[in-house]
Length: 488
Image 1 (cartoon, rainbow, N blue to C red):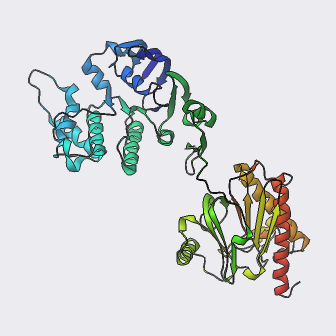
Image 2: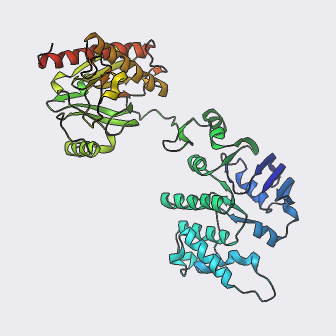
Image 3: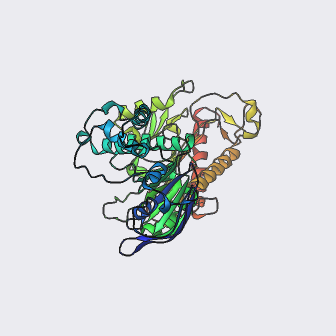
């Protein structure tokens, strides 16, 4: 569809240098890069509005500079970042101007087909309801959508967009980009857009062109282009890249450099509050957590931690709502709260602090073994939604890598199994040694301050501390449980 070969373009001097790339029909290409990298200059070169251009730009195999203005307008439409408004037409009149390339003859007039197309694109862009309003009476975001409709009214094969979500709120950004992506898929519309928001570019673009000082630094899929080291070099900022939680797309985060207002926080058993129906831990600042909790599992940042005792016969049809209501009643912000449930008695809780080499670990365990299971014989059990039994909290005063979180869960699990084996805890159904209970939960929470801890495996410095602390607390909590039940 568009082929660019060895393009040089600029104003008094070249901004773009030796730029080459190919865009296929129906593809969405995102142009990214820092300010001054040549993004807008590239769009102007593609649209033939720059006089100082060298190199080759082909549209469907034809040289772009050989097309007449009407031919170019039928092939390509442009949505610039800014519009000059010296006088105002109605919304419908403004969109109708997009049909100019199809006007013929000496006495030009709009046809039924023109109005039908305008009606369609106004519907697509959500502006139909104010078709009779004056353009100058609209907000900046509403005007942006009007000019997008005008561009679409040209029925172009190629749509060039300079920051298409400029002036748009979140919902309209999503609606606009959803519509453009749908048109690229259903109508084979080729879209080339400048993005400053790297995450939107990642989600909506098939490929990305990363410019740096007028040259192509990378041209590939978002997964290949949005790489942390590369982005940090180009944007001269610390940028982290991680996976989107719902799509196989990368997401970026800027890492602030300031440190003055960051509150120093450490894990401390004095923040524990234990009463008859729950274990509660309050951190002065949010901790980065990875857990199998009922309320807010997975990764997240939380400062309120609840392990709520409920009867073993508790109906768990909607445990999330139950914990949310409990957090509200206690005055905790729900979005800052991580919650678990346990059928184990809170009075059997055990906690332990161990100082590592430059870091500290606090482990808190509630345990019971009434639903102990040998994982090898789990198929002999009936799956039931029952409250958790062995719940393990591990709080770390350190800076954990993501792999350290996962490895710490593995280490904690190994230590828990070791404690159960030593106490000869058995699966009541199979009669074999149990490896856990059917509803165990684990939490790793870290201050993300202090010493960097890359690994949490069993022989790493962090793993050694976690292994010992989890083994000791789990064993003691189960011993208390057995003693209270007269089974010790």
